[in-house]
Length: 111
Length: 234
Image (cartoon, rainbow over all chains, first blue to last red; front, side, top):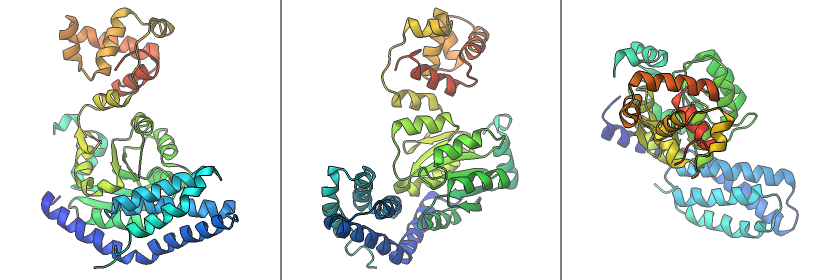
């Protein structure tokens, strides 16, 4: 393996490139959360959409953390946890958390 | 590294001059990022990728990678269940859990199932150090290289006090309980012998008896078992 310092620079550059290439997928996952919030607010969140949103939140938690967006990753983790508690009172927190997540990622794709 | 102490996996990786790695994660972005990171390391080759737990087991059995980077939450078979299934196979693959979040109970379970490293995805920049530690026969836990994993296990386990009833259940003598306590503290045979004023050979003999009585075969298993069953305290 090469020197740790050089490798870290290479790793950072590669992660940055992949982050930029992943924009569409990340935005797609955010869109799924947005749709779930709309359905939730209308009282129409189905079990299937909840499961889809939970998967999106879970994947955001992992990928955002990997790319250094720790705050956004942590918010996504909270959304996932709330979605996991099937239709509990905690659902009321979800719209606010999704907004916080969008705010935390504002400008994150600008080079 | 002492050549005689190398395991089959280490010897294979060393003789080839590279470690073959299988990436297991259901998120294609994570797999792509990990692949790119691994490609930055000299001496590491990608053996394959799996997007769910079942495929992970299949590919590990088929490809015998030196190292498995395993996510915890995956469809079809969760990471720890995949790891449990792999423990039944005689495969010299070492595993590092690469996950978003993990609690102490899951870390202990993973170590018990033979995982050699735990790395959060947010710490992926430490992946090279983690791989080096694990391929050299050590552990990577809590963001650092760990030679004696029993110490880590002890720190993470809930506080318990050893009980006479637990000792009686397994037919353990007071001396054996002392030895279990010392193993759980991460002491090696030589240190235990000095602390108890007995020879290293006697410590080994006691350990063999203890392993037979509780049905464990390694110090790590014994330490985990002891803390779980009230045979040792923190």
